[in-house]
Image (spheres, rainbow, N blue to C red):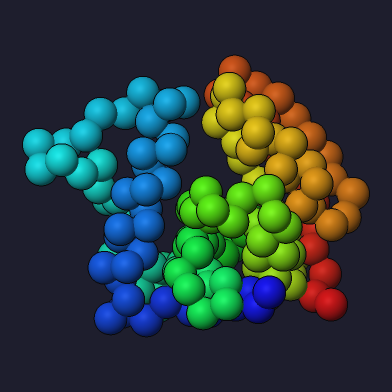
Length: 152
């Protein structure tokens, strides 16, 4: 299985937008968000991922050449995920872990990964996917892991 995590071009923004709709659909179970008047959830900050000064980065995930997800990274100190989405077909197959680790390698340094309260599957995933020791915290809004990634 070939897994690629490639920067999304501005021409691929509509693909990322559609993937984020699928992600929002999955998340509506946790955040209770409703569809907007056009039948979409929308993603307010998507355009920011193609503005260089924003230090945001959009990636499309492909498995054997087929679109399999997207990742949005807000680089900084610490780095954070804007979104991390793998389509259901490729979940629980190791794809997400390989993608996460590829992103950590691409952005070495301090990271903060956050999971919304109630999303126990995401907490379990990140505990497995983070390749180094991390500090975990729980608050009323969810769980988070802090760690430092070093490029391999």
